[in-house]
Length: 79
Ligand code: SF4
Image 1 (cartoon, helix red, strand yellow):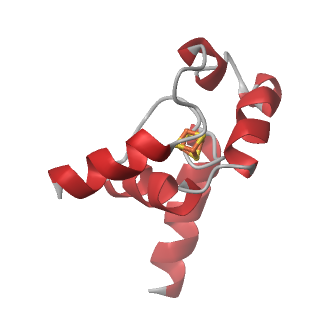
Image 2 (tube, helix red, strand yellow; image 1 turned 90 degrees about the horizontal axis):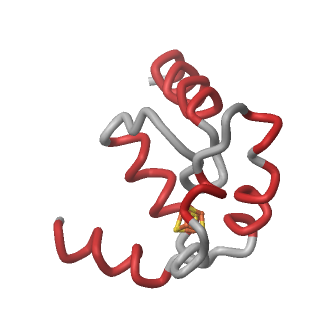
């Protein structure tokens, strides 16, 4: 899994960008990060990784922490 994980990270559209963009103070400040994620070819892999490891901070796969929590709840309900 480590190699697979590394591979998508290397392809991320966020690579080389200022990391603070992806760690906004609140969801309203996440628009810049979401715009980058929207054009990212590994968005799904990134989001699934963040959901899997229960990543608590930052925007991953175009989703804020609050949005990821919501996704996890939705998946639990439909599982
Ligand atoms: S989806 Fe967003 S946070 Fe994830 S690798 Fe792509 S640009 Fe980076």
